[in-house]
Length: 425
Image 1 (cartoon, helix red, strand yellow):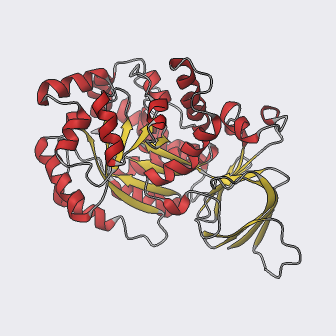
Image 2: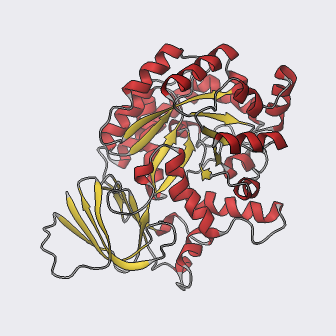
C-alpha cells in the first residue's frame, strides 16, 4: 500500500535533527519521504492518515526478550534467579508445544504493539513457531539463538543461520547466540566460536546478570564470564551481552575493544534482585547500550516506557547525579541503538529508504502537556496510553485500541489461557 501520514510532528531520531512538522510517505514496506509538507503533490494514495498534530517517530526496539514466556506471567514471582529458573521455569518450559509457543508469541506481540515496540530480539524455544507467528501477524522479529546443554547442536545452529536469514523483507532474521556461560559446555561454546569465525558474525549471550554467576564462573575458570568467553574467541566479531550487571574493570575494556553492545533490562534485574547495570559507565566509555524488557516471566510487563524511565532513574540514583543518562540518550537507546544491536540498521530512523516501522504518539493526553519538551515527556512521563498507532513494515497493526492481526484478541487470550492452565495446572 501507498500511505501518506500528514499533519504530524516528526521525530526522525537522526543525529542533530529535532522535531519538525511535516508528512511521511510510505510505499510498500519502505519510507519514501519524511520531510516538510509538499503542496500539490501528484502522488496517489491508498490511505491517508491525519496525524492531528501528534508525534510520528521510529518504533521502539525490544533488544532482549523471551516472548512466549507470557504463559509464566505472575506464576513464579518473588524468587531468586537460580531457584526461579531451575524449579519453576525450566520444568514448565519442557511441557511447551510449538502450538503453545505460536499463540503465546501472539499474546506478547499484542503487548509489544500497545507499547510502540515494532521489533524484538527474541531468544526462545521452537524457531519454526516463531517464524509462523511472524508470517501470520506481519510483525518483525530477530531470532537470537539460545543453544545450551539442554538442547541443540552446532550443525543445527548453522542450518538455522541460513534458514532464517532468507526473508527478503527481513520480517524475520537470525543472530548467533547461546543461553549463558553457566548452561553451556566449553565444547559448545568453542563450536559457536568456530561458526562466528567462519561467517564473520556476532554472538549474543546472557552475561553477568548476578553476582553468583560471576563468582561461580571465576571458581570454574579463574576468569569472569566476559573474560572467559572472550578467551574462547566468541566476541571476535562483536555481538552483545544481555544484562551486563556485574562487571570487573577488565570486563569493560574487553567490551569496548570487541565493540559489544550491552542490552540493559532494568525492570527484570530489579524484580529478581540481580542488581543495577552500570549504564552510565558504559556510556562514558563509548560502549553502546540498548534496552530490553526481558521475558514476561521475570518482568512481568512488556512496556518500553517503563524500561526507559527506569534506565535513567536508576542511574541518577546510584550515581548520585541527576545529570546521568539524560532523556534523549535513553530515547536513542530504545529506538536507534536497539536496531543496531539486533542487526536491523534499516530500522533505525524515520528517513527515506528505511523500513516503515513507526509509531504515532498521542500528545493530546494530560501526561504529555504542556508540550515544552516532547522528547523528555516520552521518557519521564510517557506511557502506553500515548501509543495511538503502531506500523510495522508499512502495515498498521495497532491503532486506537484496535489490533489488525490475523486472529482476534479474544482467540489469542483464550489460547494463551488454555496453554497456561494445561502446563501450570
